[in-house]
Length: 331
Image 1 (cartoon, rainbow, N blue to C red):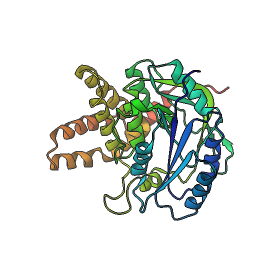
Image 2: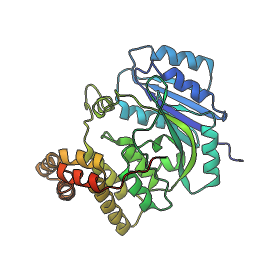
Image 3: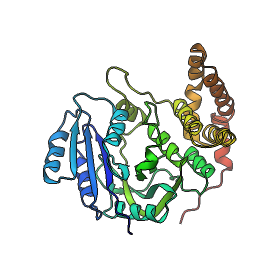
């Protein structure tokens, strides 16, 4: 490996005293030393500030930034991106862990594949106490060779973790800031995958902490602001629209964009049970609001989504699908 870029790690957090020390330790233990660690504290009210300041005092690679008020997770997600200076960037959650060779392995993979904009690795899972657990969902990774295969993978997934991989900053600069919408990180992942390939390191170098408290409602409550613009609701229809918008803004020809949007909506509404059921729950209220606001194009897309989702995402059809679906073999 000849390429030794500065890597920026952005850790947006709020009230993270329980696990932030362990997460910081895993990053400081990287065998790749050329990085900066940007910690952005969204006005935590627990011991997060004192913990992070103590780490920053011991290691000059850490810079600690504290907001005077809670601006919401989406704002903080963008804040660490704005502060980054490196040729590569990655987001780091306050409770996830990385093996010591995570950064060096991803840098080497990107070095070997100049066309790749993102590198992700195998994923391990731990519970709230740090005990290794079996994954509760099969991960679908957007590592296909074509743009179509990557869009399809994101649309078929039920859990999206690859945005926490290592990203070329030049590619990230071509994407929009995170939008105040449910699934904002999935939208960022989509925008990256529309701009280049994804390198993959199969070893489990990223460890995701599963926590029963991380319900959609719990996560959504932290995305927006307590006051002002307010919270971001769980709205799978809004996420689907933003994913379609990401395709519309991609540097592709109009026919390709149209084909990819059609692929996206069919996969989300028909074949993704999690997202499809969520869309079914709020597509009609969203369409009604679009009509009232005279947003005709938005209304038309929402009605297409409704036509796709209602015949499929119901108990009868889902039960029949489960009966005929081939059972997975266990080893």
